[in-house]
Image 1: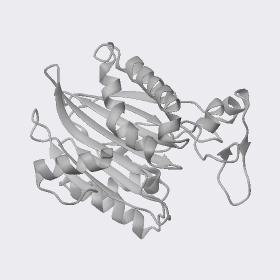
Image 2: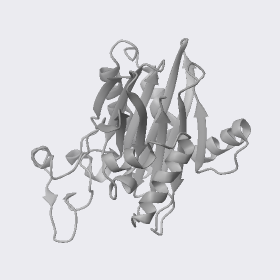
Image 3: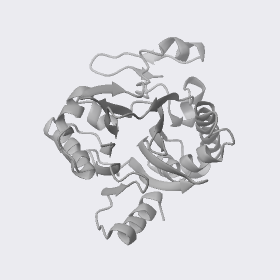
Length: 282
């Protein structure tokens, strides 16, 4: 059973939902904090390659909100593996509570090493990632590889919490590792003419020229923080950070907000898989 199927079974049991690509939940610590997610398959011939995590859980008497988007490429095995394992790996790091940035970076790199070791089982595909851990409704730890993105709405303003890892902006690092960045007319820049992101999990055939070290941000949640959006590039290809914030600022139900964003991306002719998590903080 895949991670997506397990999540679906759990959600059916808890929420009575029959839709594997939509769901919601809420914090037990704060009745004001809720989350919702929605996924839509793109127009490509291959199976859906986006995977989502959205849940609250108690760990060592602390409440953690765990949210993630994993956008696979060249197969769904790597994002499926990440959905099932990445947060567990992060929380196993002994320094997570005292040095979360260092712990998350180490867990990302170690997880990538495991994925490469399991390439015979998982294949040679890869995945971008954006993860957010909300600690006791007060502190947010966000990490990302690739072009899945996290945005915070604060007093109506879109605040980026992640950095898109694009070949054009990291071309010097790629060349220093022995790779190159193609820039063919009518196409986006690609690592070795293949991959349109410069950092990712997996991608064994390109790994010498890619990085698996994430960008990590820590944000304290204050009264001005309204909501967080995590989404795959199927959304961000057609909407700016501020447009996404403006589109759902007045939508109080988190799942409806996530669905509204995916529908707006479709209206704007996004052809990629689109996955979105919204965490309302008020």
